Length: 330
Image (cartoon, rainbow, N blue to C red; front, side, top):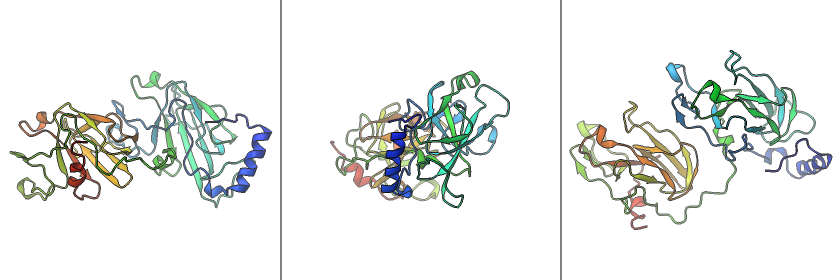
């Protein structure tokens, strides 16, 4: 990432020419890197204080998370995600603790600003970045320019995954804007990779006293049909990404917090699946086909004697069997 801080007169001239050549609506639909050391704006997963994805439940049933927590080490440099006008300070905790500081940036959704803000009628971005100390609370700032420093979150919440709280002013989800601009996910063939170590052919669970693992199998007590496929996987085994894509989660299948109530979704070029009963290494960011995704959870604790397995479910509830079988021996 090239930084101009402050912008030189030469950089301004070059940039003005770029604005003429490329209309604002064509520029930077995704935001820049926010924190040094986190080039892809990786989002905080879950820790004992909660989860960092948009819409996560807050502790004590205090509503939902209306922002996204971008991982950032205490003391790290913070950058402006887009160009705009600063205003602040933003006091999130209202108690003057060591991280009770932040700033708001309001600007056009797709444009750098060199001299002035666009008319209010134009669509644009407005975010609050909290738990940082900005260099200044007012004035203009440019995309990628140094905004400030991450505050010492560990002093307030020891053991938390330190992060910047990024919140859209209208409380909409900023996740898509945080995702970096990347080329299409390379799939290296249409067949899926091995999902679980120890099961190179993606063998599907047969039938046991708890039911059957094939697609469309009747559920116990007449509770509909099986909308996924159960790929055999030993408790604690390594789980791999079947194809390249973007992660999102966590996915809670049982909604009861039992030992296997975890999982993640992968969305890639042409595919979208949920892999359940696993604990992923992370819930957000890119992953490549065959890369370690996580670990199989202890299914025997919940269903003693079952054939332990990963539940693989297409997002559209179609049958994933053929994609799994094409991976046999690969």
